[in-house]
Image (tube, rainbow, N blue to C red):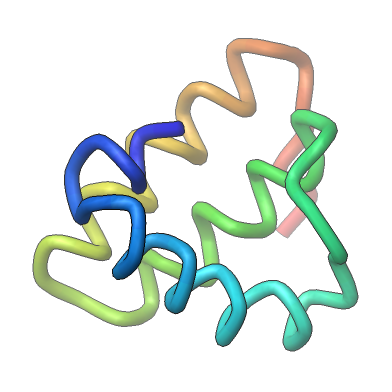
Amino acid sequence: MKLRHMLGPERARLLLAEVLPTLDIKEVKTPRDRLKLGKALMSRGGLLEALGTAIKTQAMLHGARDDG
């Protein structure tokens, strides 16, 4: 996953542990999950915003729809 590559495994794990419960996701499995994660990261600004944009774009390329 992009987060592990860019942030390192420990920081990525901590970030996911913080963000996923707010999205009612246990783990990122589907393009829709990636879309939700990307949008959540985009709201945090900075590097996380850039990573979130990349994750959201990837999710949409794999069939997720951004309905709002």
